[in-house]
Image (cartoon, rainbow, N blue to C red; front, side):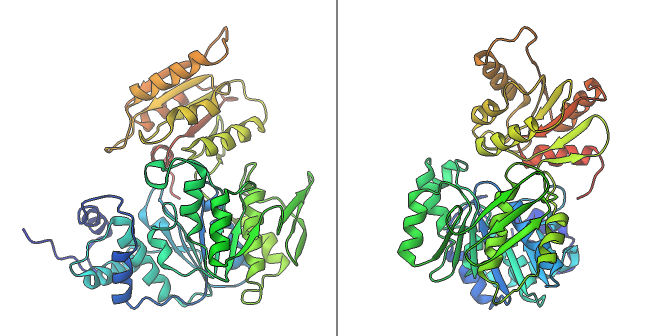
Length: 435
């Protein structure tokens, strides 16, 4: 049976459905196929290119870079993944989410160019968005790595400045089961003679060795750049630049100064090409936003959305919850994919949750609510005994779990939704919110 003929006029949902069907594997790491199609498209990206990788903190660092550069008056392209509600969220041109028409035009071009070469959904859409950026007359392009670094489709781009935010255990089936192996994979976004930022306070030796081996200009947190702060304001210090009296970023959470200092180090490293005034830094840090990263919704009870899905991110979420004011009860709506370190994530949250609402997630990687509830129950059993222990209930999906949490929660309580992009997206949709 011949494949359907799609063109620029084909609706975006139909394109996305088609893209999910054209390659035998959802993830097929390697750059040969995607480079071939990029060559056929004669893909030429102008402007200063930032590539951002890391286990956690990528999205926040990308958002700050984009917001600061926009505030400085530059034309900026931003590519991130995955999306929460609509695919279009993955591509922003000059602060605006890409339209369906802009995307389908690029999809048609990639489809025509690929010929017999098969591409995964991520590879195909990455090429389409890079082509959109190539045609958009941009001063700067900020690209978030999808998975790892070395073999990720984004790594076909030769970055002018690469950032690795953190190295921790996630996607171990693909990247290795130690920080050293994962660090080596991620370090491959670094380039010879170009700025290579690392904001992980304890980078793996493999990352340091790879950067030295290829002759990258490595900027290390604590050595080449740092931050300091008090309750009112904070300051960045780099190799040759200080930025004082900065307001705290609008993005909430304990790790955001680390992410902000990585963004400022990156900007310092290319300041001869993209000078950024202090006022633009101030405005950008106050305007940067990332849905689903310790996002607190207005109203009562307090609702906190966080896509934390690995132990490192869950530890940060737990710390952020501890730093909030008093709430009589904390309700957790949690749904996780079954290839994640479920027990490692839950262990970081124990002792903070009074009522657990365990949700099933769709798809072949989705775990059931009942399975997740078993994990939570066994984790609670190993925790210190409590006379009034937490309750645990299972639900078919995040919307049902969230509805139950809202029904039970008092006005002064808080509901934290975490465990997966899918979990947060389902709750945002249940609330009728757009990004």
